[in-house]
Image (tube, rainbow, N blue to C red; front, side, top):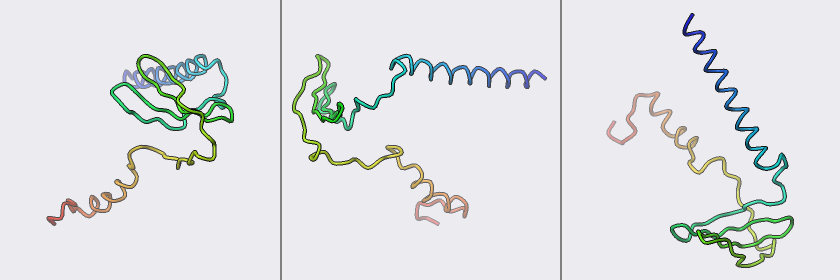
Length: 114
């Protein structure tokens, strides 16, 4: 019976944490959608310096972001921006898993020393 209570309390705490983080995120943005300002791409150019392409409304701007502040480097033509391919993750886990899963099922080590 004690394990059942622990599981119920754990699920309740998990649900509360989920709803609290959703509430906190909406409170941080004022409950508004982020459709007008978006970071399109970011690239590190130093230890704490970045160059970012941002879309503000229908305009694209190139910003320099560093520890000391943010600087407008250029306003970009929307035709010059290449559409980025949507990525699910930075690490192609599904591709790697599909490569090694048949080897694991067959008992092979996959290192070429079968």
